[in-house]
Image (cartoon, rainbow, N blue to C red; front, side, top):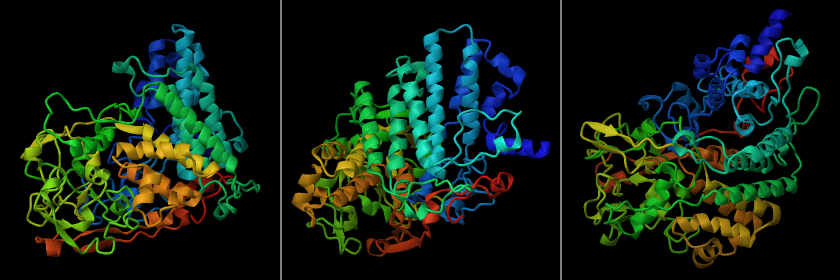
Length: 630
């Protein structure tokens, strides 16, 4: 019995698995825990241990959602991008399983971060921080608030991935009996409410912004905390967890329903209020949508390049005014090397992360409406029609160059976020529009002259590469920006979504969508659809505006991994099953190159909305139930 109990306790609270940094700082035993909270200096190390469980969202080896969204793809099996674990590649090609789940955040295994170990560490901190004698009460309250928000965030990450989860309000004592260790999953409503509760408790003791930026950037503030609550309540209000009849059978062994199968509009009202509160706090702290400010030595760029930089640098400009929360521990050096095309200036790159051409259909036309709705855009011949690029488009496309009409007359985000044959690549080493770097993707060119380092679709996610990254024929130095985990534009679009779902189209919903569109150089929703769409009334209905908001969100956050989760919370199997397509990159002439190839067809079902729990956990703890169809 004692052996079983110890095994269960280890499985549920994960007392020894997760963080090497934590083990280096404070060994996990009673004696050293007492020492850890005897002084402020050692307690501060424990505070940072609580932060150390944050996922490295900018890491190619840890963030599986980059490839999992299939907005980015890379060959498998066969040529494999350097630094990408086999498990991530398998996950992206539909090899998830229950025996040894890939990206297992429940247990901290196979590429996953042990979230329950993180929660346990937070609980230990909260239980002991009151013992520290040499710190002020104001500072103690701030640290407690930070750790409560971290605990809320770790619960949110688990809820987003698994749905209903066991809530870890307190650590299970070693002296607990076996039944106390056999925890059950709790309803998504309860998890979301607990996250909101933790944030509400923390907010009064958090700073509105970071004043000591040299030492404290990345630590929790009021806008960060409220944004986490907004994310959690929006997720709980979304179709995956709000009125999802597919999950009617997802119940605990005692019959407790874990997902609400009847839609409840009040959830959207709560989400809207949370988004508004987070936006107000962010704006009050000085956050705003990013706009590129030209350095003093960067004079010869026009309005088009400036607009593209407004979009591109919202990701890559370190700690910019739109980045509410950045993850300093999340390096982006290897990410940029994967995403940058090889060319005459930057030849020392991997170049294997290809943008899925099919996903690129999501971008609007230059008129700001979907390509299949624009009355002035030739949708039927988008793949077959070749055009010569006029000189007037030289800031984004190579003059007098032959390209597909698919690449012409698209919105600014298309040119800011993508590199492709004939596109410009504005970088610090070529900052002059009279001497721009253009990409040549056809076979035999510098971007395709390697059998192992090229894009197999003909597109790269330029969005993720800093314009300050530099190199020459034999080197490559990435401008390793901090990964922006929460951006203000996300709150704007979630707020518009929640408003539309709770009360239908409104001027306020349009206001926040149009703010994001305006930064991208587009007219407002109502104006654009009235002037250019075959469905002019689309923004005036709840269903129509929902479609617009979802597409706007998909465009704004393409290649960042966020859409992996958006597709799931919206139950959009159509997006999850988009095929991976590209041009025929083995060809060297436009007529042969611009032929669409089908590369991979995903086979997701509704089971893939949630991740599986490891089968062994269900054996050890019979109170746990598996997610549907796993």
